[in-house]
Length: 510
Ligand code: PNW
Image 1 (cartoon, rainbow, N blue to C red):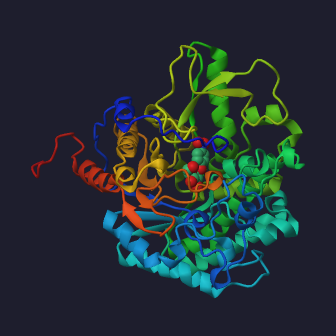
Image 2: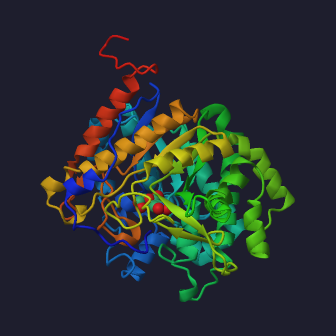
Image 3: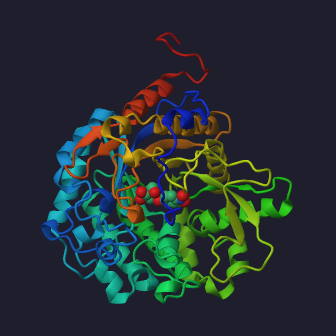
């Protein structure tokens, strides 16, 4: 995905649209929630404002400008200084919910449990939360979206040190619950632990940039980091359940991202097993310990042996105790692939379950049409399958905490063309149809949908060249311009939720 971010500007919007299915505008329950999502480092800017401490991303984007195309999040969308404008923007879109992340080093500049607190950082998020609520928008807060306080990385290796990381994250989470929990009722501990572990400590594409190439041990580090994330998550859930839930009555969980995997050869038992195993290595890695209160999937234990850490008895107890308090399943989902069983033994750096990932199957059929970025194809039918998979395995109401795409060629378009984002409108429409089918035809509980993203922003290793926003941002001036997809989302959710479940279009008359 982030390895290859080349942009496709060659194909005209019209001919690309012809390759996409037609949207059916299928119904959703009246209480279904929709909104938009962002992450602190991708939008805030204000990198050194009001006492904020540096994060690993401040350091990484300046150390490795080649990885981020010479760009950084110093200013990003300048959301930190445009808060009122952005809340008004959200309100104008008619969203029910807004998912954002808190920058840990704004609240605790050095990050640790004995380090000072920065009240100006707390004030910023109070202003945001109060502003949302004043506009009738529910805040959903991610505690960690990849911007670890740099000091914790230098002090003890961050997530490579499970005990210290768990204690510091628990302390930071407690601070957030106590200062914001009277108004925040949906908490997410970590965004995409899979990406944190593998892109931060295996490919090195994301901060802190560890990989074998940079002299680190990618055969063990990702599994240690994953272990730390699971334990820190469980500790925060335990704290919330014990000390805050009785009075605050909110929800807490984690966000797991995944593609869905189809077998490369639909008639091959080996490929079918490979597709199942790939999802266990992707989602089961975190989902099984957290939602089932159990161990890592057996397939992972088998392949990874002693490189996969063990949970002590006390840790197993914590996982069992906290599992029921994870009251929803947060799903980030963008695309899908084919899985083909490898016939040679797994490489010791393998993290897939010894599976080859492909975009074309044994019959030469592509999984779906390409979007504006090489890792993302439109695969709405597979989205429905992933919803069923997650529901069957974990039995929690699902929130789609991220979903979206860049349009082909979008970054090289003039403003007028960029805001006419029909490819994105179609993508959203098809993926929301899939949610409707999962709910109404398959019996899956899906409770809400957060489009990624509220606005074009700093797309990590791709810098500003890949645009996921429903709002166009001119990064030279900071000017925001709504795209057609923003209006489409408001309209489609309005329409779909008004349709009675028996399927007859209302027209005011049931
Ligand atoms: C998410 N994949 O990452 C992140 O949470 C966002 O911060 C990011 O901007 C957004 O997606 C768009 O890239 C991804 O498996 C994680 O294909 C996984 C995948 C894609 C994106």
